[in-house]
Image (cartoon, rainbow, N blue to C red; front, side):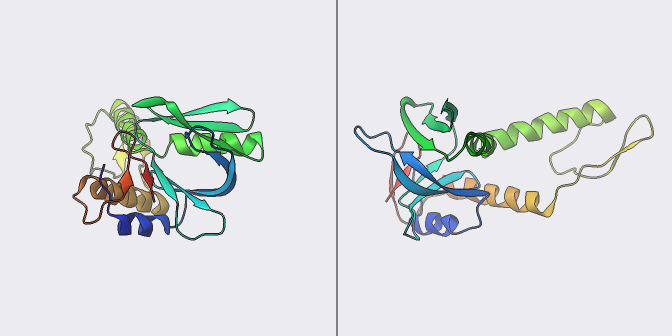
Length: 187
């Protein structure tokens, strides 16, 4: 997968949906747990040395599996290489569970399936077939109104996700070192 390195760095500086310092171990043989700042921005999980502003790597959270390994440890592996796992150790079990939930919801695949699910639910309730651009007040069959609105934050996240999705599929001016199968970027 090709990335424009400047765009990826710019994305890493955007406000995070979630960020924390955790212990992280890469899938390399013999790698040890190291304290890293991890930052979720749209569907990228950036990781930084705790004393640096630029990320040392990023994981594109598409076609991946997030698993709880131990009480306060979770892992991320990619469907193409399930034996290569990135491990993250949190301070508490609650923090670990929060990360697992937010990471599972970060992918474009999850957002797309959620959109399809809710569109189908609205259709069941109203009998009206919705196009993707029809987010308006609908009249339900039992004279109750059903309102579908997106918050400003959801609109921003949708726009950022859409922009990142198009950037990831567009030809890049600069190439970073990436793993074509997993989409991981490493400086």
